[in-house]
Length: 284
Image 1 (cartoon, rainbow, N blue to C red):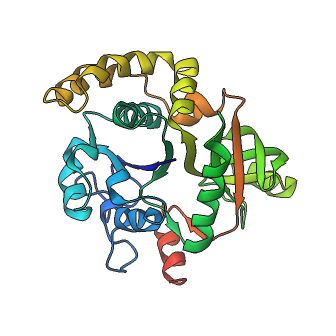
Image 2 (cartoon, rainbow, N blue to C red):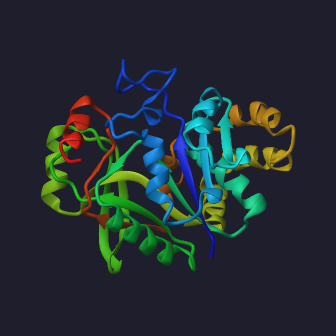
């Protein structure tokens, strides 16, 4: 079965000011001084999964030029321009609705555009395991990073029993904790950092969104007849801002009983601070 990769690249550059700014946020910057921007590194990381023709980037209208410049092989119709930021649930709903119009029933991987992964081979193996788990079922898989310390800058995933090795059942998603709570998470042994990477079948995420986020899907149904047409951007400007502003974690993940997680022990960092950039720079 075909796989498509959706890259979320709508961040507005708040956390690494003044290097990252609203005019040019961190996903479009070579933060690690390796000759590639963060979004270019993300594309490169996923190319073993599918060809560039199956990549999609959701971003702000004002960043379209960076996507075109930095990912020249990406089909123009696969650059999805949000007229305004409405958090990750509408972003994902839009991408998956557009994919469904031409590629119904495919597998989809959704990823942030600005994280660093240190072991490419292990990462791809994990994504392939997730795809195998989701392609013939209505399950959603997310990746959880085995924590190296009680971090307060990441959300956490609480897990239950192992379902099919190494996949675990997700019990809950936790917001960024204070230091004491983070220590408790680490001591319990069943909490993982939330990497914000999701794997699912197109039919699965559509049914889950319709069940748990119907208001958002009502707007997608209004946009759908205009997809790939000359008036797609106009329909987006009319209906997309009416979507509830909510994360995919709140909209679907915390409500669904079909969420699973694969523990990951490869090096990972979301590069959300100058200290994180310094730490990763020492490893490469």
